[in-house]
Length: 118
Image 1: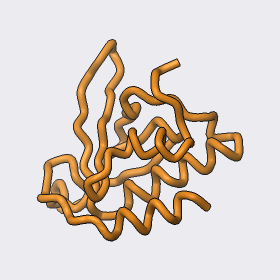
Image 2: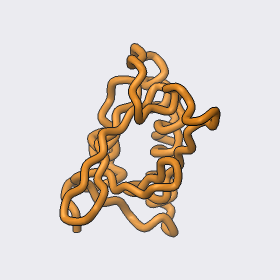
Image 3: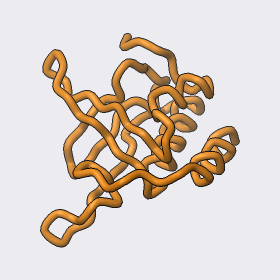
């Protein structure tokens, strides 16, 4: 699968410094951060939902959507991920990087998702 190649590239990249919203940052009150993909363009960080800014991916019930979601999970759990969150139009939006790559852009460049919010 395509996301395996992307994962290998991500592992070869330099690490990030710790960030308060990074899974490798210090745990909150002794509990590790919980990251997961809900779809290719929606994630959950410590129980709070956020939409990856500026992209739309196929429904996670389709084969293409499952592949996009799987890639997001791989990138989130690579150990070198951080997300910048902001509220826009009442929606928490995230721009996330994984090993130096902007996840939002990787999903579009690899053909999993499209630019724009539809």
